[in-house]
Amino acid sequence: MVERMAKTTERGEADMDSLVRNAKVDSGSFGELYDIYYRRILNYCRHRLFNGDIAEDVTSKVFLAVASQIKAFKGKTEQEFGSWIYTIASNKINDHLRKTTRRNRILLEAANTLAKEFAD
Image (cartoon, rainbow, N blue to C red; front, side, top):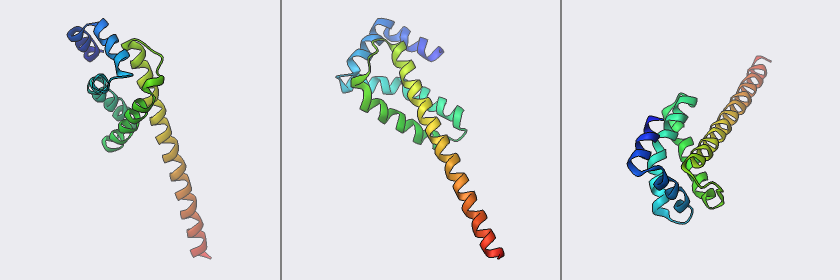
């Protein structure tokens, strides 16, 4: 919240809203949003995933999704953009956790199957 307030104070709230609107058609504006939000999203991913390397991978996936979907984004304000990007981040984190859980379960089942075969 403090970081958002600092950026808003530096640029002004109306200017930040303008940046969000321009990011749909201007790669420079998108780059500015990336610079503003990258650390926030990375920290959020680290907080949820407890692993810096995985958090970096998921953060990359978040920004790839944002870049590919920015033209369809209906919001017009920084607040709407913030909600949108955190929703994408949450979904990417949840996807990662589901895949990891599923992968671990399959590996455990395979290990149990092999252990039974060797026991026989």
